[in-house]
Amino acid sequence: MIKSLVITPYFLESAKENHILTNDLFEFGLKHADESFKEILFLVVDNNSDFIKKYKDIADKAGAQNVRLKGFIEDFILKLKREKANIHNKDLNIDLYFNNASDLKKAPKIDPQPYISFPISEHKLKETIKNLTQFAKKITIFDPYISQHMTNYSKTGIKQINYHIKNIDIKNIEKFKILIQDNQSYQYSLREILNFILSDKIKNDLHIKILTTIKKDDKKSFIEILEYINKKISKTKIDTEKEKLKELLFLIKSELYDKENNPIIAQRIKSIISKCFSDLGGNKTIIEFDIIKEWNKENQQDRKFYKKGFLIEGDDNRKVVVDFGQGLNIYSKDNKKKVVNIYGKKSINKYQLQKNPEYQIRVITNKTEKHKYSSITRFPTYDENTDKIAINS
Image (cartoon, rainbow, N blue to C red; front, side, top):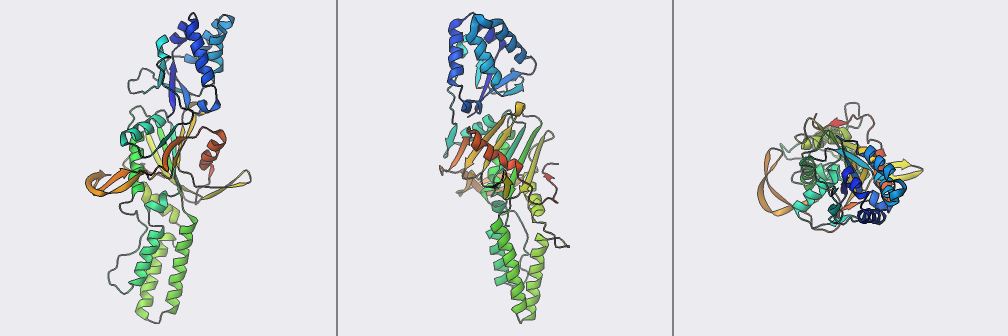
């Protein structure tokens, strides 16, 4: 997908007197001069040595004697985004490592439009996510359907309420609550994605933020069902039925509103979804879940939250945007049964990776498209009075 590049000062020093290597480097720079490659290829410099100063010194010394080497350093290397790391760390996976003259010929091909379509193997998925996030300092995971699919504040909840209304005479019927839906794939998919990200040993001080929204249609459906129950209460002539409908109405409203009738649904959803990931991360990893508005006005344009993917941020203002196509529910429930362990609880559900090719992992290299995806971080929170909840605090 994206490519990390290490160029040691020793390698550039050896190129000063090696005109074949210099010409090859110059051609390498020309081949990858397009702006799309700057979204894919980034420089890794040793945090224990001032590589940048050494690059500049080598370029100055090369001067007019080796114009191509000077141009390669100044017009290509120094214009790449940079990450700092201990380049001798054995857990670090570097895609292109130029230290000896022969290393350039062994360099893998760099795809200017990285794209992987499902179906893929779980190993490939894991390695791809690790490749994308290895140097990340902050990762924003966004999908507008997370809250709708993970909780019953959706069509599922409306069906549950209608069942309560239809069976209002049944004694000891289960009370209605906003809950995590059982056995749904979004929860499993997000946990697997987070586990793949966190499996990299070199990650340090990582901030992960998961963003979703509350769909307007879901909110409308719950308002309508409350109005329907109110009308049913006013019309019924049977006292016992009237009392039970009032009790049902009270239970539903207590899940959606506080005692002053202020909406609390965003806070409720944030709280219950946050608990699904509270066991992940650690002292140096913050995992945060937030709900933002479905629409945002930016530069006189109305933007809707409908994209699904990652925004990955690193050093030197380096940003990588990844589109997941159909959604982040990259696993679906398998008909086969298997005992698996999900956050300490046993489940007999088995999940498999989606086979639909509309699920994808695509790095956005077009700057205009990238800006549109990145705008998700500028959407206001769904409820300005609701504080963010740190999942693993």
